[in-house]
Length: 175
Ligand code: GDP
Image 1 (cartoon, rainbow, N blue to C red):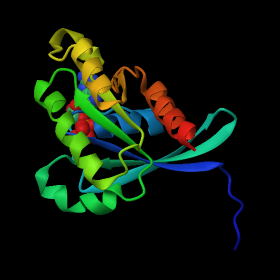
Image 2 (tube, protein in one colour):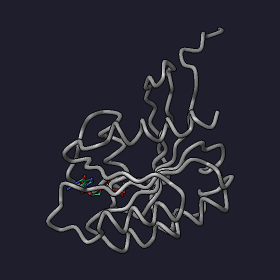
Image 3 (cartoon, rainbow, N blue to C red):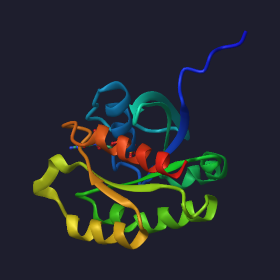
Image 4 (cartoon, helix red, strand yellow):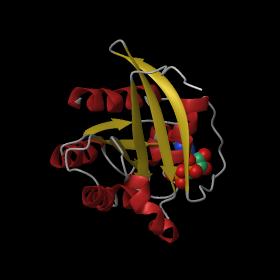
């Protein structure tokens, strides 16, 4: 059975970052427009498919979610294979998760071509009163790493669509 391809591009995007920063939540908000206040344990790796239209092109996004826990480290090599874009996520109320962006960035550099489009997301911007990472610090890290930076809230649906459109546009630019 031969199926006609119903999209122009298929992009594999990875969501990476410490556990609990909201990777699963951002993904579910974007793909299913839902939010669950409970912690969702990501067992190993899972991915979701969605489609968006950008610059007149239909783009199919394969969005991969993973657990940041060290016990899942051994899945890493196959997880990175063929990724066209990387979302590095931290929680604006968790300084440690921001510091670890450097570590996640270095890991991606060891598995993927250096010019693979990447973006830093500071999530949980709805918790502004608990913020411990300033926008200035995040922007200067993004500038130093040569990547884009955006703040989101999976809870309040802030910048979720914009984040994935910006990421996809960066990949399209390279094609
Ligand atoms: P992951 O381990 O990075 O996939 O993080 P989860 O998606 O499981 O989220 C961890 C916790 O943070 C859960 O309790 C979520 O409900 C919560 N969370 C995720 N995103 C947000 C957000 O934008 N705002 C707030 N206030 N909580 C969030």
